[in-house]
Image (tube, rainbow, N blue to C red; front, side, top):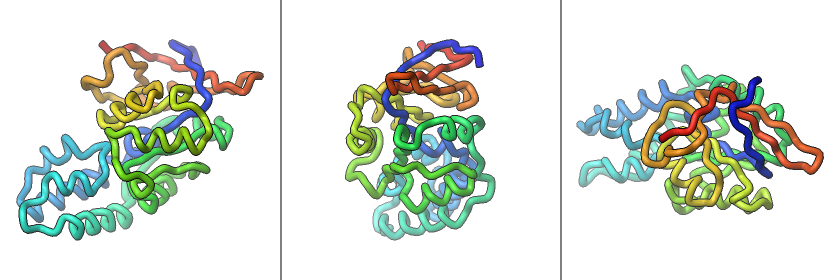
Length: 224
């Protein structure tokens, strides 16, 4: 790999959906069913749901008089049962395999059960540390999830790199003090000046003799 940029970190933190796992077909099927069932605009929901906890999106869009908790439970059950089309983001398997097991974690807006299901469906290893929607009181863009991961890994938040693909997650990463890296094609207010990779094939990591992760990026560019 020819490096276009290089950063150092003590730990790497990864979002799941869109960063490690491509679950787009399942996500779209689930939210479109929800929209049809309640007479809502599916495109409006999909434009804002990515990177956020299911319950928060349901609460935002559910019509008055509809049980938001029941709808959330139904959506989560549908997502857990549906793994058709789920695959690993290119390069995810190889990058995770190259990292020491105690130097990376997943921080996701999915529930723990759903995260385990999707990581397994994509053929990816489960991390030693998984911070899910069940483990926080405030979801992304709040930094609680990333701060929790850094604390449990016993590293400073500012010594972590966060890989994210959605606005809410990038905002959460920046608010935690971490260095965000954009995975994929998302553009938004949070992406200015950040390193971007199209997928994780453009990322490699090695451990220096001092125990620091040296992370190299190929074909990267700073976003304006």
